[in-house]
Length: 171
Image 1 (tube, rainbow, N blue to C red):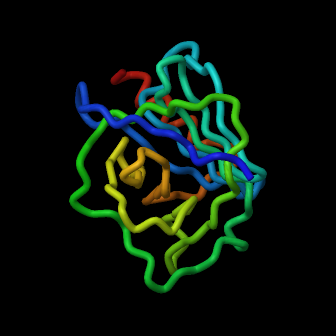
Image 2 (spheres, rainbow, N blue to C red; image 1 turned 135 degrees about the horizontal axis):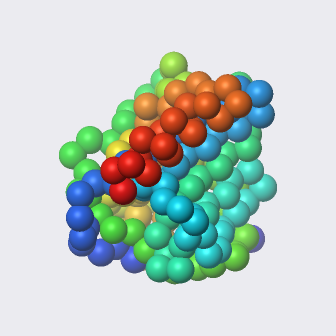
Image 3 (cartoon, helix red, strand yellow; image 1 turned 135 degrees about the vertical axis):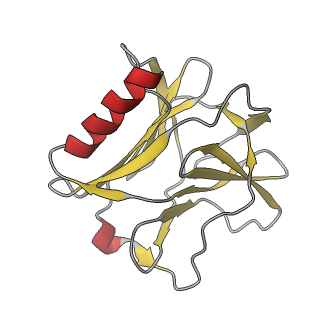
């Protein structure tokens, strides 16, 4: 079994990053863009499981999340709640090119939010990394869960492209 993902939490250094999830209807996959999309995307490395991939830059900051499990297979959790009152933070992923655990994938009734659960650890603190993106970390600095909210349906990447264009102009 793979090791837990190690995380370092640092104070935020600027305004909250833009973030949005786009469910690609023709691909049955979720793409979540983190931050402004500027010229060459500073991709450096990744962490991945069978159905989830995190793209990371050289500094260990999250750029993009892909979930390749169709939402019809996401487990609807009637007790699903979105994080509230979370501290903003700059999150640094400390591992690169490592296989990670396959998370339990849970969603709300409307399937507009998703939680990727890596542990049932209750000693956690939740941080807001970007708009609509929250990470729960345990006291040992390991990733417990990733929650993405306000997901929208997208066809042929049109909404994702529009989001990138809009945030390129303001980045």
